[in-house]
Image (cartoon, rainbow, N blue to C red; front, top):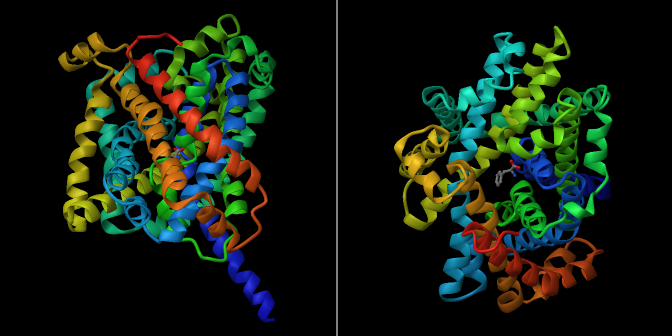
Length: 463
Ligand code: PHE
């Protein structure tokens, strides 16, 4: 009796952790970002590199952050302060904590796009959305895109300020599995369209001639983003994790759920481009960038005839929920950083974040127009402002922040502390992979990635 109640308790502890972490991990990163990066960086080869990285490096970082969080019982700033002394500790915690502050504004801009599509599907405009020009027309319409962004940002803020988070979490426990089921149905429909098989080959057969250094840089940035690594989230979630929960298998489960949903998103989107634009599919894929989800998927729904509007509505409701649960966790961690670091109360911290979100988000949202500041920015960089924030956080700040964690373990706590923490609840089965990745692979890879993405950004070398 005793034994069974014990094992139940630890199971539900683990389930709670896995659900919460997967709720934060599964979001626009899987459904919007992963497919367009896969399209841009050569399809199968990108996905292969991603999976190898997630299974080794991603897994190692997740275990590290969760274990350090559980051990210190603090969020990143506190965890760095606990384990190290001096400037490094401030820097390492700070960089981990500031990344969500920069991500949440542009995340909300994409959330606004999702909202807009949902509203159009509700109005029954499935056919209009399938028009190639619709998306470009929408994001270059300053008022429309700004309005949708502000509404999404307000939804996130309301949840944080009024504390209805637990309600949202309860609903998302139904929404997330439904999203997975719907993604499978849509993916099956997509890959069975005539001509789609070319797209399936593009996704599953790696073309090694398309491999470049930027494939690794992009796959690694995506891995951080999608698994919520290198931005303090897992320190905080780890600090809430019960001592008896098996860190290793909980981590595997989160990473697996996250990667499977990302792959189904790819299968929903990429083969459909081959089916609906057979003549210039690869060109479409290369050019689409962040618009891919919004341009490709409406064509799938449109081809379903009458039921298209229903599928479109259901799909975008669930994506909206997935996006909201992620943006809530990004904003929550931003607000608590301001509370801890600047000793603001919750209301003031939320007010500061509203200001930052509206300011930075507006830059991203209006960045597709021909306004003066956009033209000026275009003169310096060929990215859009939204892409710039995305690049800055994913390809520059996250490698630095992950590097800080690796240094924290190698120089300050020692690897044994992490191993001990994992072993305090279970056997550490992949200890060998963990140690090798952390000691050798991670520092070297992170440095190379960082240097190459900076050089690439400044156009010094084209990789
Ligand atoms: N992982 C989320 C996604 O894939 C983004 C996110 C990162 C959310 C960090 C919260 C914290 O969309």
